[in-house]
Image (cartoon, rainbow, N blue to C red; front, side, top):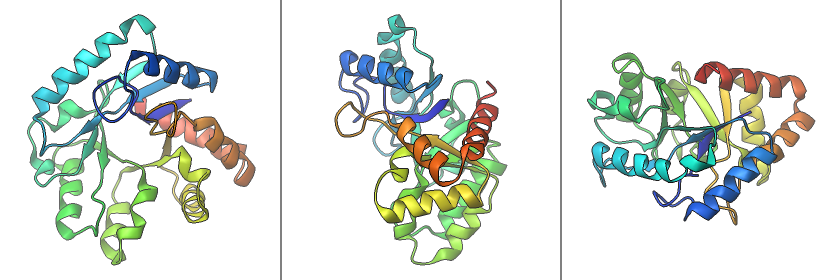
Length: 228
């Protein structure tokens, strides 16, 4: 089982506060059967340079080296104008892959947004994963750009909490699983209080509502993306 979206590295963003909390989060992931953890600290291009971010991420990763945890590092890259042409975007990919986790704008998507995502895929030659897709539909009063982006060859990441939260998010997430084969899960865990690792809860809901076969497909999709 792969957790494709976490804020588990200590002291780098609004996720884990310190080593002790990271240790507890890692223990919880292991207890739920997670075999690979993708650490995706927030990256905001308007706040920090890529070089500064990578240096901080490396420093944070070194502090957890003694845990011998199955962590791959990447980033949750918040959308920014020009990212489809950004020279160093590849350095924010997950591990040694060409996978990049993109957090989309929390407002109406535009033609410019569509073009940037398209350029990341076709010009940068990167495989795009859209982070926590269940959070965006509310903002899409005009559906055409949403539809066009969803038709691009990309992967949809759903947060585990969307399967255990409110009715609308749960319905959206379940429908996405039924209609789209290229979906993966992430806990988007930040701490051990309000946003704990929770993949097992989501998987129980999926198994109950859709079936164990869909869980197997989710695991196969995630494993194929990482090549594990």
